[in-house]
Length: 125
Image (cartoon, rainbow, N blue to C red; front, side):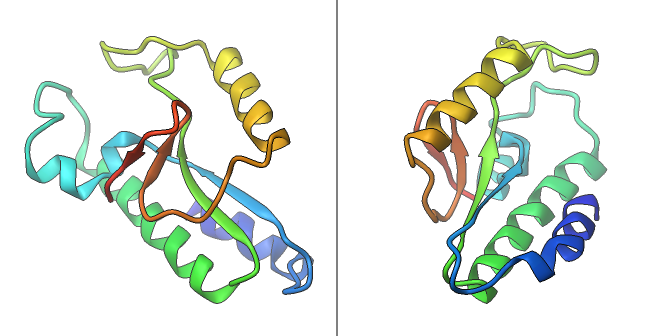
């Protein structure tokens, strides 16, 4: 609900004349397709986390439909090395943030149906 509340608070800042980019930081674990085929069976992740990330993908898509002039991206910042990281985490948050800024400055974000990885790959929802 946090993403929804922030966007709702910013709603009056959106106009269909300005082109905004909204990056919803997401997770590979929000992919229903990958969950169905068992790609993440080796990771210990709660149902609530996976459900929240899948819901965030739906919110991203719904907002994209409502605000057609804007770009809404579900973005996976990487497998970040944090205190709650998965065992396969391999990226520092600072490195990820730098890459996100570079991609934004290069105008690399566009509306796509999936979770965008910083590498450019797209994970199916």
